[in-house]
Length: 217
Image (cartoon, rainbow, N blue to C red):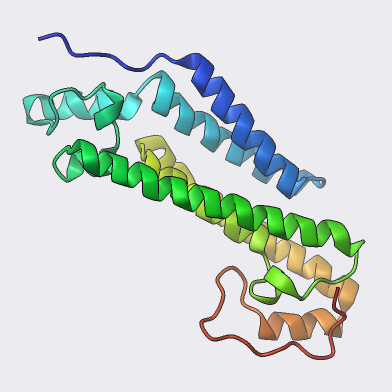
């Protein structure tokens, strides 16, 4: 039986890399060298992800080579059975669609978070922002980026992105720490109080206390 090969769509690879790369670049706006280095790692993550999603399915090739006839789907190179989470649970087409939907929902929410964070910073004119989404977490732009990575990983997990995802999260965590040192030097006690009251990436449940004695925008 001839197995359908639904990859090699390099136009889709280039389109999606450009689409999400431009979106994230426009929200994060790297300026310093360390920010460009972090952005380059994220760009590499996008290349690895969409190359396997539409171009060359390296992970599926490796798994089918290793598992052979034990691979749980009959048409491993069909996009309907390309989601590895669904494959591990039996290869159901509806499960693949479910994971794609959930991953897409995470991606959509992530882009909204990135957009809201960028809008507040853009309107702040260099002042300290502590209201809105910045009243919930100190680095919503990176929270959105982490959610975007998670959404991609739910939609289309691969061996390469499984290695790159935690590395990317660690890189942006370190970048956030460096940025907080710069902000502490710039805003002094105001930012020190902000650090104490607002979590870094994930909002506290029921955290409705207002930050006092901080310049608000």
